[in-house]
Length: 162
Image 1: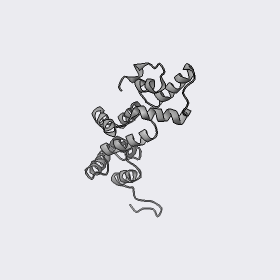
Image 2: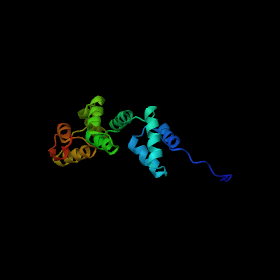
Image 3: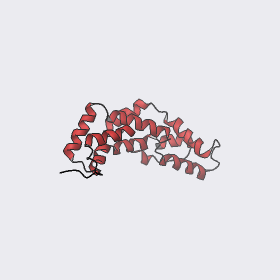
Image 4: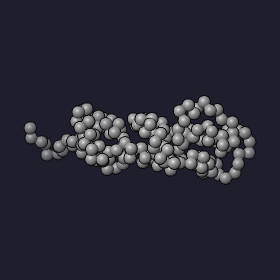
């Protein structure tokens, strides 16, 4: 069937995924979802992802390290980073290893976030301490870390998988 003058040939799943990887790291799960959304069927997408993995263009380990560095630089805590890595299909063991390898001082990171957000002054009253603690909890810092940097009373119930 002849092509119309304005028609472009459909890009292969491999080329589409390679183009996505050229912009930034992606997890295998994320690439698979994006290819599916563009209409590439399972077998073609799977073969493309296998080939990219063999060529080391796509690597979940490298993706995880990149994401951890990025989120730590943005001031997020370990619980938030762990949840995001989990959503990308990484195993608990791999997540634990990548977070340990990053060797982040989470207390110092939490303190830096407090200073950035609230300045260098200490909280004058319990309500302000609680407000600062909630800020850190929302950013994914465990209750023990929040307690140590804000000196606020924080419930440990939120730290189930920390």
